[in-house]
Image (cartoon, rainbow, N blue to C red; front, side):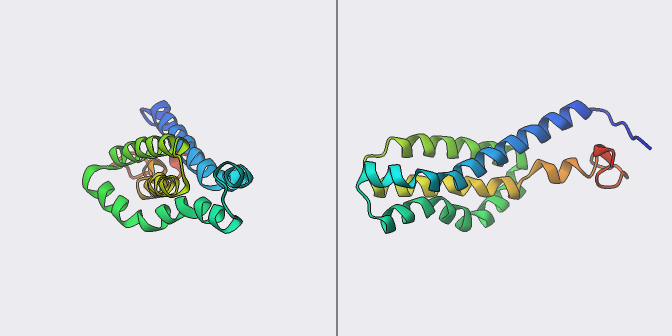
Length: 144
């Protein structure tokens, strides 16, 4: 049985944007180690120092979920996800222009912390359960 709901295209668009945001976050967090040789060469870092620099975004992810979850509860998921992505983009742009390792590490940690907004306020969790007040089971909008 196929269930059609009003606003289906909008739901898929929001789901697509959420997935793209999650993909961008993953590329930043888990793609950064591939830049390790360049970071070592350009900043003159030892392997230990460069590895610590590469781990800075994950420190932001580990330290921020409770704060982002509280913000999502208070201000709403859309605002928190949007603010997180804007903060991450600004911090990454600033980190790309950092002159030394310390400011770059701080900016990378700041850029990593909004990575916690996506699980804290993920639109996928609300999209799959149907519209508010709906008695449709989870996954009904995906025609499962």
